[in-house]
Image (cartoon, one colour):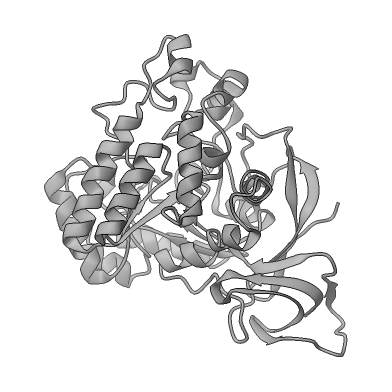
Amino acid sequence: MLIKNIRLINPATDTDEVTDILLEGDRIKTIGKIDRTEENTIDGTGLIAAPGFVDVHVHFRDPGFTHKEDLLTGSNAAARGGYTSVVCMANTRPAMDSEEVLKEFLKKAEKSPINVHTVASLTKNLGGEELVDMENLIEKGAVGFSDDGIPNMNLKLVIEGMERAEKLKVPLSFHEESPYLNVENGINHGEVSEEMGLYGSPALSEEVMIARDGLLSLRTGAKVDIQHISSKGGVELVRYYKKRGANLFAEVTPHHFSSTEELLREKGTLAKMNPPLRTEEDRLGIIEGLKDNTIEIIATDHAPHTEEEKNVEFTKAPSGIIGLETAIGLGIKNLVNEGHLTLSELLAKMTVNPAMLYNLNAGNLIEGSLADIVIFDDKEEYIVGDFSSKSKNSPYIGEKLPGKIKYTICRGNIVYKDLQ
């Protein structure tokens, strides 16, 4: 396959140039001007090629909750969003806590059109009381550990987990909300929650956990990922511990840098998520964290739920939204077009940086690398409404976004092509 006259942006090598890309099998053979055509040629004039996006925080609900999403539909949604590599979370049923469950998942993942990885849970059955066999699960193919969705409150266990993860040189990813401070999940403690007669989840709930785990990362040397950061104070704490030398990473979702708690007034349960959307001050604090690289990763926390599950009163609805198919559009609209990040800086947070967190062979486009490529038009706009995900729980339905994905190529194969 030959891609002609394409603007190649590869943050890993600080490349931004118009060139040609020749693929051979599952690899990049040549990058440079090629004076010939191939039978299978893509005209990239006016388009951008970048490394396939990498999402280190998705829920494909497989096994156990496949009425919401499964490995194939999740992979198709990822491909449509420009993603060629994803890391699934471990809160499946059964939990991803044993060699047997992990092996079955990875065998199924081999059939995916994209590269699907998974963390193992940090604790058995996500119970927070007993660590899994961490060494064996890494040997069998897990890329890290997380009890995502369930904050780890057992301090002794967390320290032991960090020490073992540090020896394995793999990350621990933490959901930072204290259950002792939250009353109702999914809504910020503030003006909107008070209008609804709820207390909600205060920013302090996130901040106290980040303060703990930032310090523990500093003391143990463990690589720790602060998941879906949502508060200005949380960003400031990550910045503080990074300056002290902690091996700390932070990820943010597109919805947390794009929206505030005001979205709940319009979208109700479609805008309910953990941690919740907070204030404009928090959103701007997150953007500052993205600008100074305190937050180096954008991850969607793609969390499918059915219409029936979401269409109930607020406190009974599950938290979470889908995000794979709208991520690049929200990033271009709210970060690049607003002058906060360059397009290359945005792409770094969606490619090479997340790949580095989990030591993935992804996020780079050079000769000899895997032919995992996204081709998109950063100017073309579309109306959000049609999804490849099995679920449709997005608060951005009806919104006009830039950044139309034209092709997603994984291991040299076209796994998504825009037909419109």
